[in-house]
Image (cartoon, rainbow, N blue to C red):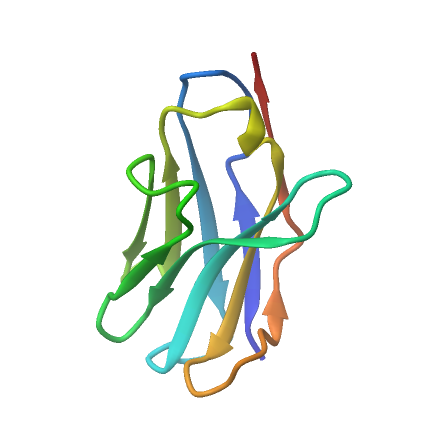
Length: 119
């Protein structure tokens, strides 16, 4: 079992920054991908950024490239999402999820943290 706990959401003005945290526990993560998703009201969930735990490879949605950065603190078992130059369209509930890198489906999800960007 893997447990994920997100934190760091809140209200910010357009152009501002937030850092989300995803604390991961429960098992060795060496073969896992940790990914941030988001879901805006009335829209489908979308992948935002992903981190491959064992070698640090990252991937981003086109909509956040150059503005968001995903990173890891190995000793704290925490994955961060630094969000800069925020836009109102970034408003969503942000979820952290984990899957074995050889699998397609994400088996483990956090409870989500709300980000609201005002114009």
